[in-house]
Length: 233
Image (cartoon, rainbow, N blue to C red; front, side):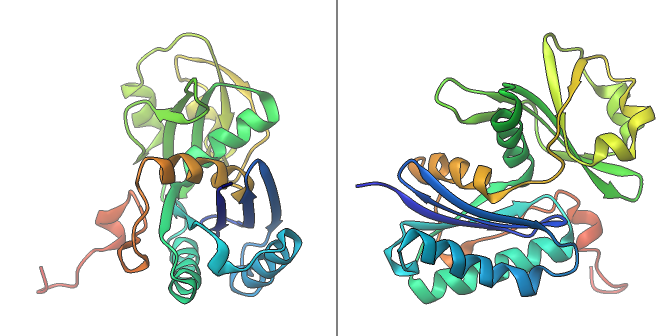
């Protein structure tokens, strides 16, 4: 039986939905920085109708777990949880950075990708990815939020050509140009659910699905996001 997964992502300026049905992917994607809440559900309806399936016929519902915009990540997980609860589906969280690595492979066939999303506050969300033989991706080190200058000082020299992905490369071009690595400019700036849903299939096979109430985002910058009020430590 073919795997059927719906993926939704609103973690960045992009708003996207994709439906995986076996080897076929049906997707919609739109750059809509302030329209996620009005765009995402009609996109869900469109891809499900095009695929000829209902929510309760799916195996899982995937979502962009972050890192990304705090508001965007919360919108995405909230909508995904609502859909999953209603259809009694397990959920799978997928990294937005890994999703961009997969997108870079789709566009450029690159198997080594450096991802950087502009995190504001003089920092980037950073991930270094290598594609594995089975098509999944391995993060080198860990995803993190970091100042570009700090990254340059801590970055270990790596061999080969690495494609770049994400808005951080343009926002902090001068600093990131100092990295000791040979790069090729990629065209992927944001995560897209058509790439996310493929990674969700690997995660589902690994047993990483959780109940909707257990689904959680990954902000990376937790100490800022969850800063407590004085006297409430």
